[in-house]
Length: 220
Image 1 (tube, rainbow, N blue to C red):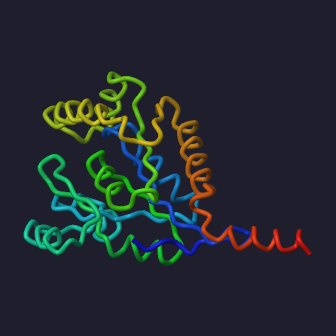
Image 2: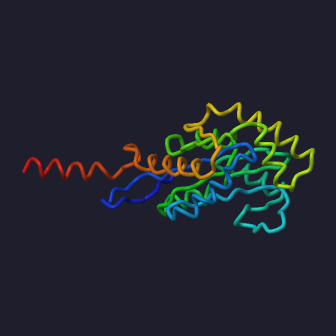
C-alpha cells in the first residue's frame, strides 16, 4: 500500500496513519469522527460504498458511495475494496483507490467501520492501522441514546442492541479502548492517540537522514 509523504516542521517524511474508529451504534463514534475532521486538516474521511438506500439529507459521494448490489459484487470480484462486510442486511465496503490516493497526497485517513472491517484492514495494512474502540458507559445508556434519536422502530432498536453486544465482544481486537461517558473528554483522548501515533518512531521514515546529519556534525 502507498504511504504518506507527510512531513513535520523538521522536514521528516512519515508514513500515513489509517485511523479506525469503531463502536456500537449510539456510542458516539460518528460524533467524534466529525469533530476530528473539523479540528484536523491533515485528516480525511474514507467514504464507504454501500448497498443501502440513500436517506433524506445524505449526499452521494460525501456520506457514502451508493451502489446497487450488482455493482458492489463486481467491486468485490475486482478486489476494489480494502474491506467489506454485511451490516443490518446491507453491504458496506472501503474503496481501495481513494484511500491510496489520500495517503500518496500526504493525508491520514479516518475510518468509521465495524470490527470486521477493522480486522480486514489490519490484515492488509498492518502497522499503518491504528484501531480505537469506543464503549458506551452502560448498555442502559446506549439504549437510551438510541431511543433518544427518535428515528428507529422498536425492531431496529432491538436489533441494534443485540448487535452491540456482539461488537463489544470484539474489543480485544483494538489497540485502544475508551469509554465514552463524557463526549468532550473522550474526543480529547482520541486526539491524543492520533497525535502520539503520528509521532511513533516507526512512522518517522525521514528521521534517519536527520540523525546522520547530527552524527556527521558531531564527528566534525
